[in-house]
Image 1 (cartoon, rainbow, N blue to C red):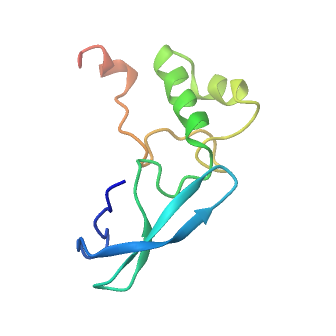
Image 2 (cartoon, rainbow, N blue to C red; image 1 turned 30 degrees about the vertical axis):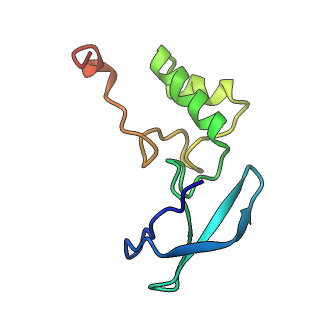
Length: 105
C-alpha cells in the first residue's frame, strides 16, 4: 500500500498511526509529519455512517428506477443519509436527475 498525501496540507511526508475501528469497517490512520494532523485515506465514503455496500446498493436501486421511498423500504427501513430520509448525492456521488439522465449517455 502506498502512503497517501495529507488531505489538510498536501504533504507526502506521512506515517502510519494506527487504525480506526468502527461498526462497519477498519481503516488505516495516517499522521502528517508536516502539520501533525491525523486522518484516514478518503476512499469515496469519507464520514459515512452506513457500510459502503448498503449505500452502493441504494444508489444502484435508485438508478434502476425505484423511488427513494421504495429504496428505503427495500433496505429494511434504514434511511441512507440520516434522519431526513434517503439523500443520494450528498457528497457520495453526483447523481443526475432522472429527467435528464437519458440525455447524458
